[in-house]
Image (cartoon, rainbow, N blue to C red; front, side, top):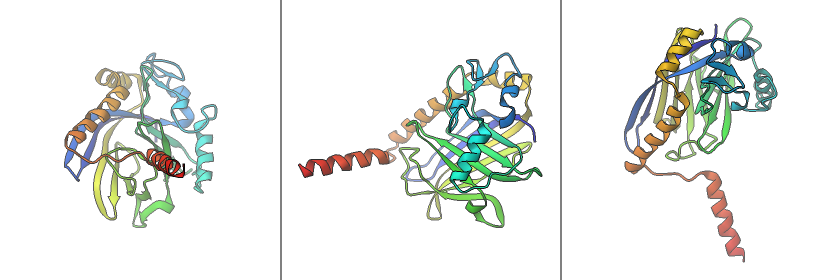
Amino acid sequence: MESAIYTGTLRHRRFQPARHDFTYPLFMMFLDIDRIPELMKVSPFASHNRFNWASFDDQDHFGDPALPLRERLKADAARHDVRLPDGAIFVLTNLRYLGYNFNPISLFYCYDAEGRLGSVLAEVNNTFGESLNYWLSAASVEHQSRPHVYRCPKSMHVSPFMPMKLDYRFVLPPPGDRLVAHMSTLDGEHASFDATLTLHRETWSAPALHRALRRFPWMTAKVITAIHWEALKLYVKKVPVYTHPARCRENKYEHVSRNAR
């Protein structure tokens, strides 16, 4: 397995309470986390921890940015009682483009020394500035006959058009020439929403990066614009809006405080 650029599409489908579908073209980076400074020297338009057309900034991911990503992953895995495999780790993510970064999800594929995919970390970010890590390992495999299908409770408010009391199902087969990552939200066994990345691999190189940048010159701005544009469509369709749980707690505290006076 080597670092690469993956290009393809992201499809979202909402099944209830109103049908809503869209598909956008995009590209994402698939980088060996131990070689990021070296990899970002591939082009004069790319850099590490420095402004450029495309840049990888250590502070765009969880944990102490002064520590290498592998150390952050090791510490976070230990906090979640997950054994981190001892092989290569690759992150599928958006870089910063023209200084701006937003990653709805980054996937860290963790391999063992024999090159087998051992676990995946899904680093999820919302538009409220919050982040949460979901470790997908043997403990969260849904069925032993399907080793790359994981299920876990939703633990962070992401979309204001979804309730909190849901589960996530992730389908994450090992990446190859084709990379597919599928996530659905479950109410019991019923899927109300799903998202699918379908991507094709290009070797990490300056020409491949330049082609992607010409096609998508400001990828992360496109991502955040699309999020708000599709949210507006859902609002027009009168899809119910769910208040952020923190705001609900604040309102409850204010109500109790007023009644106590």
